[in-house]
Image 1 (cartoon, rainbow, N blue to C red):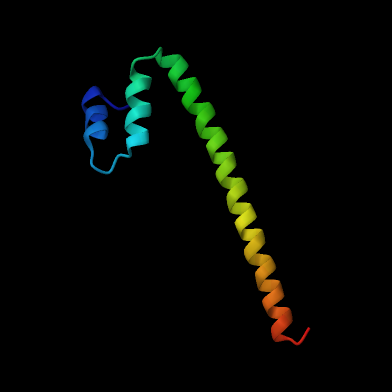
Image 2 (image 1 turned 60 degrees about the horizontal axis):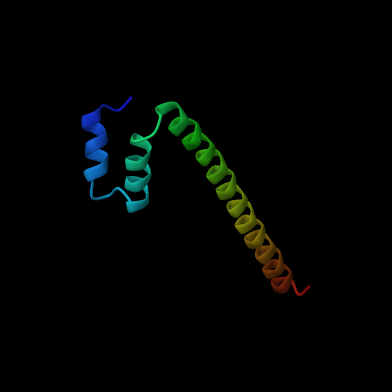
Length: 75
């Protein structure tokens, strides 16, 4: 578990996004159990969304590959 010092390092890090800094700062003002529950749900929702976007992109690339092969084979 990160210490307060480690949290401050994350918040002051130049590579930490504005979005993450804002989320972390606001989470620290909340009940920690509620914040964790919300963060876990957010991670699950965003992970699922990323999986869906990746699957769609792969399907599109696969379809393009099939079309390209068919064109190269005179079909």
